Length: 278
Image 1 (spheres, rainbow, N blue to C red):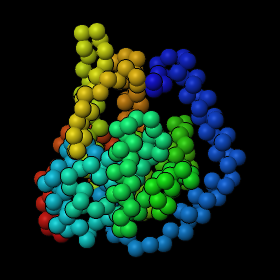
Image 2: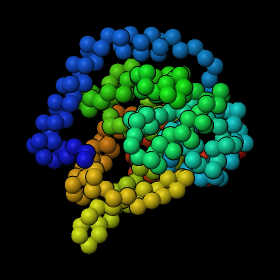
Image 3: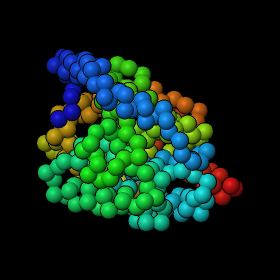
């Protein structure tokens, strides 16, 4: 169950969690030194423009095919279950980002199988693996880059070396990474994040979510995550609020349907025309 900050108990839990993050980060000298050294000494060839591919249903084969046609002009970062997408064999990313603990250790049989599929995919020598700090992620392969995945929502930080001031959404971690790598322009595609549009209640007021992705969709029972509609809406509203910390003229959201209002927007048609004009 996600913490319900509408309750006094939930608010106290969040404050204690933030205090714990600040304390542990201050005493973990090894982690701080490693991340600062790694990020201060990055030296590799990269393009001027990056494309962040999230897993939302608006990431279409049409967009993918056009990116493939001008592939040499972009560095691409994908995440999570991207390898399940039918376009993943022809659109190979430069970076593959994982950050969900379930990608490392899980009891779910389906998730274990997906993790094996991800592992086989990112073993490709062309793909740079990015993960949170820690040895456990080396079950996939040695990470090219790692970042601080501790959370402290009382801060405004999006610097990958320090605890993040936003919720644990892998897509926003990808944007933070691309900004830190100093790309001049960052397009994000498939970042719908429109969950509030997709919740339904059954006759017993049980909450379900139509969880749609570019590689498929399913109806999810959300009772293990939220205790009410108010809880769910407040959770997502908090996400939208903290995402404002990413406000940057470098980032362009390619979308018609996304509920993310932090970045300037570009229609899919204009984005495809932009690619064709390169």
